[in-house]
Length: 366
Picture 1 (cartoon, rainbow, N blue to C red):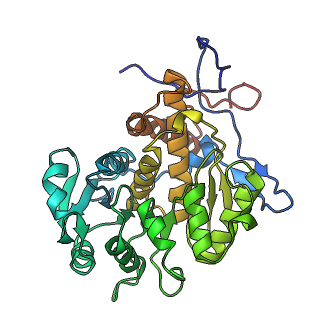
Picture 2 (tube, rainbow, N blue to C red; picture 1 turned 180 degrees about the vertical axis):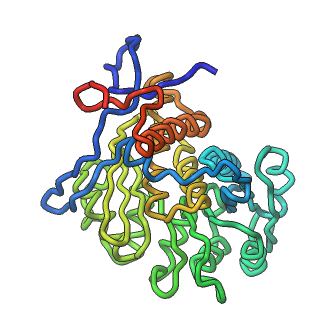
């Protein structure tokens, strides 16, 4: 396979991209000053991301690297489930299981290769029966859950999400969970879902889903101002939500914001129009779930997941340009990014060079 290098600087966009040496992003982690309504935030770079990588012991096995259980997909959105599973595996998870309504299991079993499938009981065609389904989910061994991508909307889905949010009896340390898409829309209808004993989670809304969640919590959309184009407003709103809900919030979009319950706010500097296509959010959910399964806490998993996803997007953009990226292009780029981050982490640990240099802001080698 031809080795792909990560872009040092984004080239001018033209009909023909100049051929030039490529390397890791030169960005250093710098504080982002908060505006009148926005908290200060740090910006990730390759070194800070490398420091978050979970260990890969040489004698590890598939159980060592975590088990992801994905509750995703429906007849209309089968692709979402497939993207989640592939992304979780490409992020380094040892095992991935896809849980779908039992009438759809034959369809998905024929589509997935590395992942296994699990049938969830139904009370109607394609509609999960929440009580027996939650029993089967909790009985299945897993280290992380991802819930929502491509799931069929309905009252049964909302009830299942409510049950999954609650900490199971007799399990003081339940597996963490990524909540996306239909799970977030369901949560917006659940009054005060964040109260009581709630499973540790990472919420990954785009601005529209975030507005619905905030509206369900009694916050008017006008209070958050422009959640697509105003970086200060995005940081402030995500920070307020994370502190109120006591969960990690990943507010997607250009310059994605990762806000944590303790007030930590991190911004990913990626602004990539190539990622504006269906399914890329499903890939992000799978990556974060895979990192949770490998033992990262929700905050670090979200930060590293966003960085892996964004840098993978830059790799594909470098090859294809600003348009034409498909969500299915992203998962296979993730291990390339992780490999290079692992080399940086090893160099930092040993103090020795490992065959390439990380470029600094001035274009020199660090």
